[in-house]
Image (cartoon, rainbow, N blue to C red):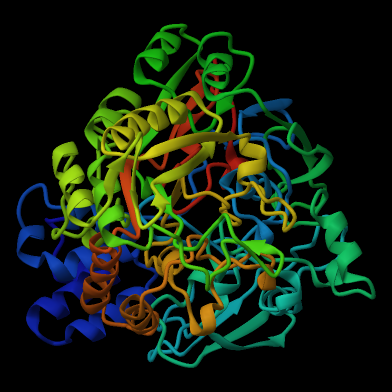
Length: 629
């Protein structure tokens, strides 16, 4: 790449030359680079580290190469294959799915199940580069798809795509999805992702025009990736009884992807068969996908690495020494992909023990002691991040972190640090008037007794034990609670044990930035006008802010970053949003976990899994196939 002359360079290299030569400014570079579909991490790196990027080993060369090569989904081993020749693909997913309707989901387990059958318009490669899926090309200024002012984008859909029931896939489906997601009656958890859109029009059956009130550097998010970008079928859900239609869709969606659901047993098993109307005639390679749920992470790892009963196991949150022993079984390999996941302790800012209008943790009912900054600071000092990282995770690949926004280098705050210091925590509580009274600290009749919930998993139970020991050492009394993952991450409005209800004092789980421009991720602490984004009974607990955190400074800055188009400025804003949360101890980050730590059979082509921070693991399942020989 470094030996190319200017006339032979691709569009991104040429654009970078214009920036270096002063022919365009940073804002113009940002706009045009995004219009080329360049991943935000690449663009932001160029802007923030031009001098360093020119040095040997700099990341710029990689980013440009990835952008200007024949970027597309990996298809290793698919030449000459025929549809269904691979027989059965066996996936073991110990957190079993409870639904296959992603726009009302809250747990990765359900997004995974959906990604085998439903699809977005575009996908992300692991480096954040956007590639087309249900569109002919990624919109750019050059091809006329993206307005230069970033106020509108036009998608040209693939011709001839049909839904699994044979109905044509059209622009009306894309428009309908926006309408469905933003309809409050549907309590869509993805509604915030679509908030920047002010209009959507089906120009013709294969053309969709999306408009925004302001220039939008994040124009792609609502239609890209297997977390937020899924398209729903209008002809199935826009009917006389939409609730009944969606109730059926929860388990057997009509879709455009490579597979359809043949049978679904919630919290147990999904069997998929080939979508007979899938647009690529030689795909998928496997005739069926058997996604088996339940059990635990160690048994899932064993089923791939040691016994060979399954081909793939997701999210192996298992102690490193156990994984090493299992990998010695020789049936498969353990893979660790860097990511944006953060294992964290969420702090409840409302009172989970007082009921108001039929709900606990009502947003206007302050928590009796967690609203005290001194108490939150003490909790933060009582978390042994290094011990948790080293003993329970792949320490080098999954380090302890002080940041809740982690894994995107250009957005990583340099301003934060963490410390484990029991004595300091005790002194902070003492100075704030929380004195030891019997077996617990108390103040004005309020005791530091709290419930600490997480999902059932051996690693998480050990994390709980480590944290509890230190918390009780500084004067808390802690009741540990464990909830089956199928319930804990189930978004059903009537499920009071899930993470959105958050009827505990603190809770622990992992979440991640699922796009390179992490607006929707940071939405998790935005309250919004009148607390509209807070998980509450009025929105069926679909609000993204489940900790009921409120900060006027955070909200103001979040509203600014949503409309910021200069990436340097946006990066500084994201860092400041992170810093507000960390300084206020609104949340306690623990470990920057991998995008995934998974097991794959030696007979499966791992290249095509293409796990990265911005897609769910099965996003490329149409191209999964067996090794030859």
